[in-house]
Amino acid sequence: MERGIRKSRIGVVVSNKMEKTLVVRVERRVADAKYGKIVKRASTFKVHDERKECKPGDRVRIVETRPISKFKRWRVAETLEKAVEV
Image: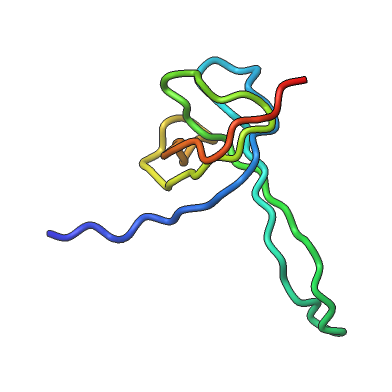
């Protein structure tokens, strides 16, 4: 039996305060229903990070996975860009 294609998103890590869990903000641009103006909409996802390597500000690609906990249904696939440290 074939598995379906997993959804993938690119976002920025907002928080890594939890153990092996990140909060990732994913922004998308959509047209307003009435006026058609392009506006930004954002969603946050709880993401599983097994190696605890991501820091706030990193750009990551996340993929859908089986439920890991009550709110976690995504995991980190790769880190695309590390945050600039000052």
